[in-house]
Length: 337
Ligand code: AMP
Ligand code: TRP
Image: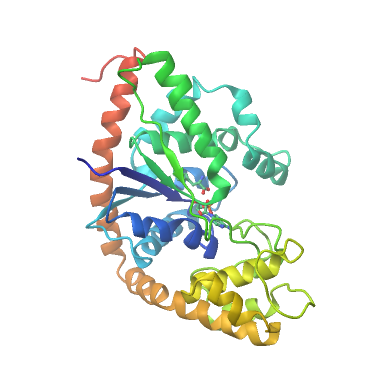
């Protein structure tokens, strides 16, 4: 039996933060032993909003190095850069031609991001979820480990595969594309902002204090946690909807210190913030330290990272091109000699 296939990716925009790690990358690390795992740095997604060309290439390599530093092992998975495999753009075009515009116009992330862009919304931003569907469908992925914010995009990828490709061009016996499932783990699926417990931690928040980047130095982590928004109630508890910041910070402490929620709840039940925040800062610094050390080693030796990306690209391209040819054929496009 072949192992089930996993595909996921993160955009190389700005610094990756605790949400990216705990919501996505950490889950990939666990899956690579039991699944045929492909992870990419989605640089084509990163240019759907205005970007700095001088930074993109460096951020792309640094993001790949973070995958490695977080525990992705090139012997057990394929790590590659999306734009290096032309099949992603090509399948995106083919899927664009069968995807209704109304499906894209109602995507929550598009609506939120386009408000931020004002008059400057690119067609690429609208198309973003179709490119993501192409990323996933090219690999016949069974599972896509992502944070909760990506659930709607996953549903779109499923609908495109099922309703617009398989139903129209395939048969029940011979589906053309595999229909993927999201894998959204409960813990860490939605890490909230440090400055507002009702909003998710995000790379695009202009306030840097709202997030902890995986490469933030210890003093900065401690400072950000010290300043994190709290409330004036005494005692810390999970699950009180009136206290979203408390819920978020306790949840982070549980994951980062490796203790289950129950023992954190009893440890912190009588604590005030002055006692809790240094504990959370210490747990965060300790959890990120090994990642930071490995990342620095890799960035001092960029050729090694580039070799990993090249090997990953070769493996991924073989799978992607086979799927692309299958789709080209059923759409009636001439076969390439
Ligand atoms: P992005 O930063 O948009 O490229 O997201 C990359 C991955 O991180 C996706 O799987 C997201 O769902 C996940 N992610 C981003 N922000 C958060 C967050 N605040 N909490 C949990 N997961 C997140
Ligand atoms: N849209 C995803 C995000 O912002 C990133 C992404 C692009 C992705 N292609 C993907 C995630 C394919 C999983 C699978 O988080």
